Length: 394
Ligand SMILES: [Zn+2]
Image (tube, rainbow, N blue to C red; front, top):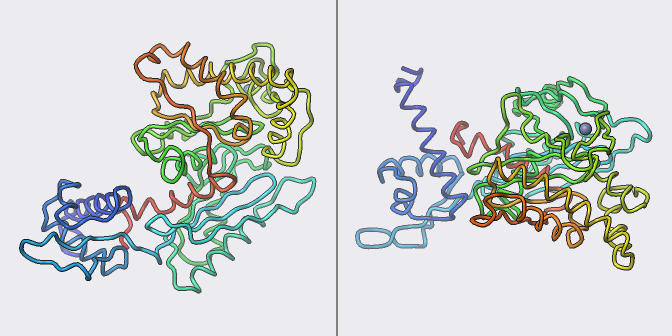
């Protein structure tokens, strides 16, 4: 028995069922209690109790304008939860970003700040400054921030609190979640996740892969990382390192990688490998660099040929990953987006040729449309997860 007098299993079940109702409203839209019972497989009385509790907590509303009663269709229940906020944060080499998302999935705040430290790795100061400013403003306007998640470009330990290794930030074993929780000053459970994982979650919940349950997201920066969504959830692996695909031995076997090995995938398809191939210089951001290359490609057949070779290396790695993971859609982000028309056709051709099951099901290669805030958006979605699974009561 728990302190409230209910058997422990009952409380667990109640939370699980609450999560079912919330996620159904989130993914499939408003529904009457009867429809919710049908969608979730729960008894109508159980749905009624859950809806009542959620309504009292400000998470859902029943439309009073629709008459209800015997023989009538019933009032639709809508996910509202405007005051219930998940805070998503991203720290990167040249910027920090914040996205606040309400329970219904509406973006309430988007803010990006350039990192001003010149020539040295960014400190956590800019991130903590942005995070506390955005959270204070949300609290002052009557919102409840149920949690925060930070997306980082690096390896995150399985505790989802510690940055194991982020070489571009110079962070090694940093207890980032604890630092943020200390800065927030009062309870705001904070977790840390890899930026590719967060972007994959954003694509699966708000982006170009929202229509499928199984997707693979590939970052396109100097390094190459993947986020894997299986059955709507992130696949993290045993140590939390699933998706670290940049150093798979695929591509030009003689290319030197930043890790010191020869023939890593990112030594053939990473941003700098792409620049080496087309013989151009790096600009301030990956997107600016790729846009300049795309412009050059319009009139330069050698640049187009180099991008086609890169597309073939990309396709070989995607065929390997698709054989293992069977994604319904593959989303390319980062620098791949401006170069899509020059890279994707070659990658898709190799994927179709090398994936043994391509004749039955060929995963579609799509380009991200979420832009620079993808990782922060996915982090915000992750920060709401405890509520949407019913683990945290509203
Ligand atoms: Zn490597």
